[in-house]
Amino acid sequence: MGQDFSKFLDGLQNIQGKAQDIQAGLKAKTVEGVAGGGLVKVTANGFGEVSDIVVDGKLLSSENLPMLRKLLLQAINEAIGKSRGLAVSEVFNAMGGPPNETP
Image (cartoon, rainbow, N blue to C red):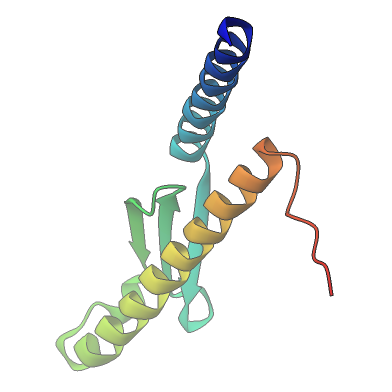
């Protein structure tokens, strides 16, 4: 039983190490959400934390405010969606790929 428990602990340490590697990788990687044909760009990391927002100067007027809000939301949501996809991909890669689908 002692040897089995030792293998179990080794496995847990391996998983913990992979989880830390995944977290570090996700923190360092970025994705970009774009809206309005590039008028608004939002950058986020693999945790979905927004790190930058770029707005084309053409949108910076009071009459464009409703459109700017809409484009910001679109770009932010796209960046966060890509961030989630990146996180799932990184976990699958670290664990040896997506699970096999059986019919």
